[in-house]
Length: 198
Image 1: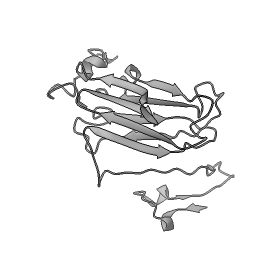
Image 2: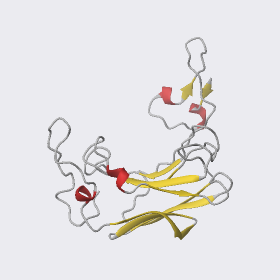
Image 3: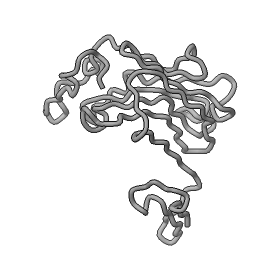
Image 4: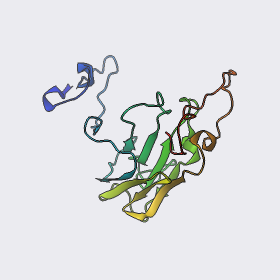
């Protein structure tokens, strides 16, 4: 039994904070700890720089991620209001086919709905040279202005993803006019000024 209620678990339901292994019914508690830092009630930014110093974990099937999510979903549910992935990696060894803990990717999630997410337009990966991102602490950062956004590792000169806001996001996402069932896709940002929404 793992019971995190006494350690300050912030889950909204007690079942989020307690887990039990029961091999008879196939319930196994994964030997992994997870963490989440939420600044929704304390801090939010629009434009600026954010840096996170972290040593990424090692272990098969781990998915360390440093994201920025909107404080308020002004344009609607995910991904309409956006998501900034400063860094995502895997805990797997460097030989893993999709990239192990020696690869970090960054992207922006945006789109009219979950089936039409423009993340693929700017998803970029950077491989560590002769090391992994689990070997030592690294600084994962994002710099965001009304003209551009970019992510970097350890120095602003070592950029991972760079996106210039030179066209509206709906156009940048290259979204179709209609869904597969013929439903017209609406631009959730059509009433905004500039090209930075979401």
